[in-house]
Length: 284
Image (cartoon, rainbow, N blue to C red; front, top):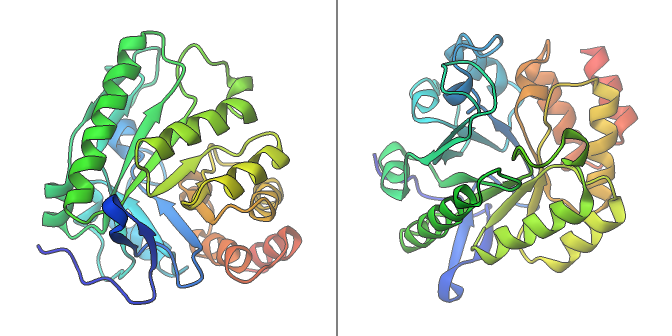
């Protein structure tokens, strides 16, 4: 399948040699609500993801700006017209299917050729810091750099998800603003067209980061939590200059995923407050 023609309303970012790359997962205002649906690649038959075609149909009702999909999920897109990014790599913490543990399994599985063949408008890959074995980071950086180079030659943008998931970083450090800002800067230097990060624990540091880097930054959601807490964090991030969200579990584990997406859209595109978003979800 050929890559679809990009909408004239999509945002653009300067690529290699100042060649502008389309970012169809961003709306004309340069902001985006992206739903990540790639978790089953490592997690297997997860609750809430166990009927993928039905889930995508429910999510489509909220009109997300974009999706992050695996090869399998791309086959059950149904009638949704949302542009999407292909997850390029496989990452797991256990060698057992559907399990979690202390393993560190990470490999590149797809590239620009797969994205073009499937009709994706770009790729998403992981950059994982804090690993027990430095050689894993070395391989990760090398693969990301090669992927970005190939994707840009094909005219495809790349979202780099810079995380602090390695075993040498504790759970309490995974929102450390200093490390997150360093990780985001490394992603930028590797050629990221979009950077996806955890929400830092320091809003001022996040504001300095979004002001300094000329590519859009979006925040991830992490484990599903309470609506009021989630929307408060989103509001704080938007005020600090992030261009949107790229969330999975908080959306597809919700009782009404479409209502959650609509609430996030009202914040990202419409300037609604966290209280407004909570009220809209509860009213639905």
